[in-house]
Length: 360
Image (cartoon, rainbow, N blue to C red; front, side, top):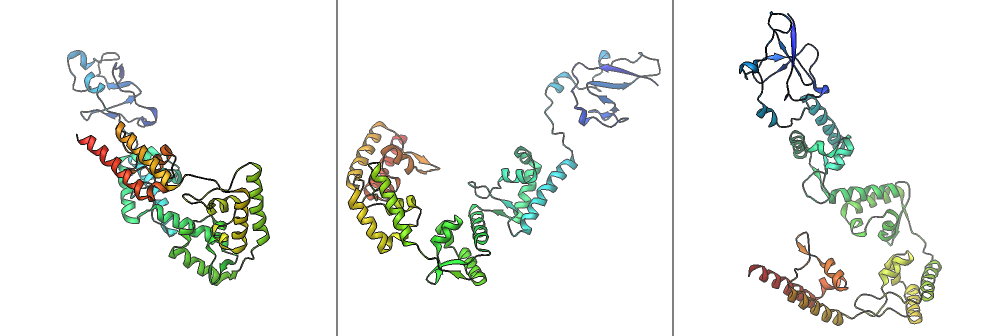
């Protein structure tokens, strides 16, 4: 029996990587099997000899072929087969189990969307593209892993990183203490961990364990070095014709900004030697003169009145009042706007006026 090949003008192109093995045909919509290679449809001819086969479409027979309209509307198909999905699921499952074996939750959490996995981190870990994880089957698999092994929250991740930093810094070294307790400021500078995080129960427990393991050290303070740093900072300001930064809303110098500039902790300025030196420096080169709270409150009230008159909305950030945006518009510190009762009343007055304009 011989075969004849007919070229369909509207046949769908089948990628070569998805072509069936040699000797196997493709099953059409009506269950019959015929060979398919590229755009060529191979049909079985009758015994009438070479070239005797007829195109059924010439005789009005459309049963074996899709119509042009059906082919034009055929949706794109995901050509991945079951074993490919199983391979992806296996890689993701192995990643989740490795995290669980390390004492973590199965999937990393999204840094902003609570309760959702961090798909980019998962994709990087298992060497996939992010869009591969959006397939419904893969998403169902991720949901099952999240229900079984949990999702790590951003706070849990920050806590884990803080514990790792502390252990890495003092695994083989003594822990600095001040009095009978760990010297949190020194530990914060050494590890880069914020002070509020060091005060948590988990960090305190780890520090106690490290103290029991390696002992403590009481760092000797170089008072002369601190005084030299402050004097050099003052000389730099004086040479530039500047003054010491002022504390917001007050007349004294900003200890926080000065301590950050010279590289020591702000609590050191409670010591007599630095307190005396800072006061002497303030008298020598002066302190910046900033607007008082009353002046800022008056200016802010005028700013709000102008915005209400123009009908501008209150800036927002993730559904809340955008104090940073307001501070950038007014030149007043966001913390002062948030803490001052008069400015808070002005913000609420602005918000109420805008809501009333929307309803009318």
